[in-house]
Length: 441
Ligand SMILES: Nc1ncnc2c1ncn2[C@@H]1O[C@H](COP(=O)(O)OP(=O)(O)OP(=O)(O)O)[C@@H](O)[C@H]1O
Image (cartoon, rainbow, N blue to C red):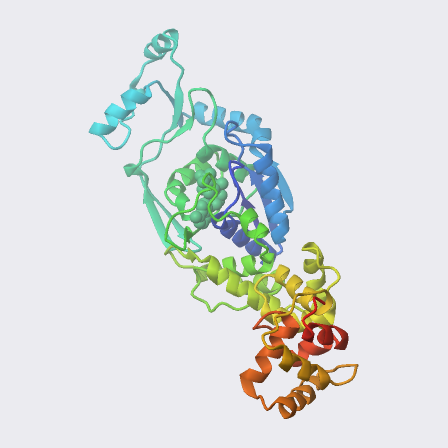
């Protein structure tokens, strides 16, 4: 069997958003599951809007998520190939020059929805006259008017009737190529076997299939994933910077929670925490995705992030902790605090409470003093809390919340957090005594 080759082909015209990564991830998982090849291709022929900073940002985002690529291409390096392919289509009569201005085309559109192919009727003399007047042609691809059918790996049996479409412009008046064309030339040259992309490209599929064939190639298999929308149901755009990957990274989310969430939404399969990309590779299945637009809900992502941290063993958490400046957190603290955070940086607060210094919250200093008197001797362990609170109860007559809450507040400055039985040994006897006296310790 031919080995699988897929690509992610963003234009470096903005910061990648979660919809773009939905596509990148699905391509990557599809390739990895089949020992295939994943190409990163920058569609950067729009030189006005493409920038090196956005190109760099794409690489940074993909690396952060672990979506590494096997090869890399840029469309600006491949113009000679486009020229050669265009010459071939011109020679076979599939690309024809048109001279209508934008105004003329707008007028025509009021009468016919589809371009009337008037330019095909021009004689050599007509064209020579137009050129002599200084007109430069744009070039249209002559569609075969027929039904193009394909078995979409996401959407099932699909078809487009190209008779209802205008012959697409593939080369602009200034000689630059349109995406519809360059993408096909690349997909042929770089040997793509499957094209996995967003549903915004379904309508291009008829035209592109015919361009593949006109260039002597067979169209690859297609998979069109639904377009993600935000929690309010609005579409996403690189240009607007909505739900960008760099923002989510800056917010301190784990790359694997984003990968897991994106591999899940739109599938209808229950959301299960997957700590490693390999786990997602195993369960990946394009046929599980539906057609309707999934909502990307940041609240759901945050919840998943918390669940992922709760399951993350210390050995794996270490590098993440170092990444947020918390390399001094140890296994004991991690194991106690991880169930109480949504983002890894919040571990810093528990590090400060257990290992650094805080201002305690003492509501009743007489009670705190009595409690200090009966604190067990060092070293404190997981049994010490029970021994201590029983002694405090005997000394003060307090019980339940009236007993536990003032102690928690005195020791942590907070009224919530991990079990006190686990926190007490981490805080230690000295700090506990000082905090009970109201000292910052
Ligand atoms: N909201 C979305 N959901 C899923 N896929 C999307 C979404 N938006 C874009 N894509 C896909 O992302 C890939 C990269 O596309 P592209 O670089 O054109 O991004 P874009 O967000 O559409 O760009 P722009 O906003 O600059 O027009 C394409 O496969 C496209 O179908």
